[in-house]
Picture 1: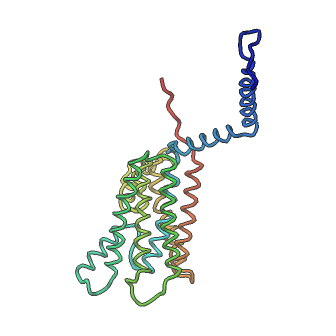
Picture 2: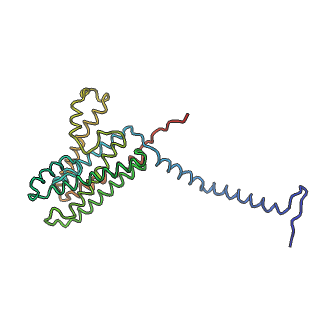
Length: 284
């Protein structure tokens, strides 16, 4: 068996083998760098940090205003087809009260009660989700709207497969009402998360009051941004209501409004993904 001999520096000649292995490892690391493996890891870290960033709320009210179009779309078509709202629960509360007076005269109050119950449940779920994580965190907002999108898509598929029987309380009606009402609460919660509490997208009465009681109502267009938002909200909801009514009167029906709402949800998701992150305050 060969033995290691000492060289002139008092070390074993066998140590040369160790040096060769070290050189090979270093060469392999350089090769990995050339192949882009560390770069790929750095890219993933940057993407992960990007998703963990809070978004800049400046101009984010534009995305909330777009939600008013969605509300108009869904509520106008739902009232026309199902006889109940899926977003604005004030009307459903009135329908519920009328139904409780004469519960055997119709079933609209049951659909209204379903919408109210699932809107409340959705508010509970979405608000806890946002509070558990950072409310303005990019991935949190994306997940929230992805959930809303999936619920709208599920409702659209069910409506398209509806057997259209005579019963107003068939599952093809009650389940979509519940799904759409649940997701509508997510839009309202998002307004709280972004700090635009007045832009819930599910209420107009308070906006009308605040708009016309504003002492700066007639100020220049660049001098009162809050007034501008309040003025835009009912116009956009009315636009959505016209579109929803158009779909409801067409051969496509309610499904057309749901698919359009899904497309708008995807637009908002893309905007949140590309939205500028909040500037971090440098540590002292």
